[in-house]
Image 1 (cartoon, rainbow, N blue to C red):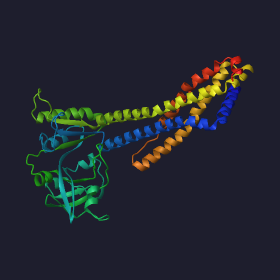
Image 2 (image 1 turned 90 degrees about the horizontal axis):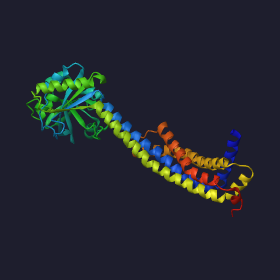
Image 3 (image 1 turned 120 degrees about the vertical axis):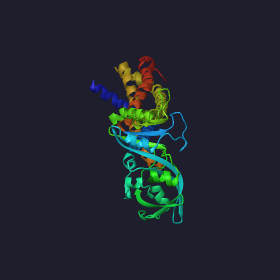
Image 4 (image 1 turned 180 degrees about the horizontal axis):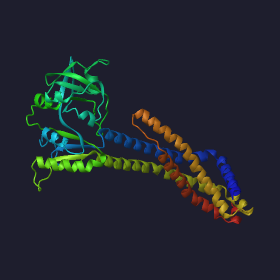
Length: 406
């Protein structure tokens, strides 16, 4: 059996080598199809990895609480249902590792003769751990500075770039926010864009009490958002339920009243984002696979031409004892060899294309063994599927008619 396969393989190789240009042009559709599948899947998986890394940076054991109901459009400061006292109460709940309030405002910041409009975030020291903030220089403000509404600030890299000369140490310098002087005590390391695409380095952190009293004139302790870090991911649901019960009780809501706050579970967000990006990856791969089908049609056309051209050869082989199964296997093997050869070249082209795309676009791509396997397996199935009909046509020829074919 192995000898027969070896002989058939030899015949198949000789037939393909006899028409090199035609074989190469036939493989081109398979090459493009395999390369497209690998490229599209690498782009999709790269997008999935970027989204997941940004969500993981926020922490999958994090709950974000907003004022207002889930269906309500909430502008910053337009709904005041969360306060600093709510944050303090949430901190006391079992399973809560840390909780930080947030008050945000867009402000013009000045340093010397340079100005920059940025986001001012009033918060507490816990935000550094919750949001995984790392300092490049200096320190974060402490609880004493929050209690005393101190005019101190920690700046992000984008703010530093636009207000300072490169190489300057900003710690100890003075910036002006809302016409009042603030002492810079820390410079954050680069964070990057959020999952929504906003620049998380374009920010100035100040104590929440300073933002409320000195900058925004808030006297009711209201906040724009609360971030809660849960001790373990297995406690997310129970802590979320406990926070919901606590805030409803504190806000004196009746059983028939809906929540006046919205809790976003980062673990659920991660799962939803993973599902969406997974579907996107499959969609891109499906679109690219269409080119493989087109390539398979090209294989079938060429194989039909080859059967017509080699009709007398088929008749001679049958007259010398070759069975119909032998003829079928030979032509099917030629189609498979075309598909496999195109697949191997397509793998190289696809990987190279992914690297080039990543270097020029700055978009991360991920090339996995799974994507390569899927592309090659699909190409092989295309080769067998579209190669079977021409092989069957060749096997069904009658020896006498084939020998007399002109």
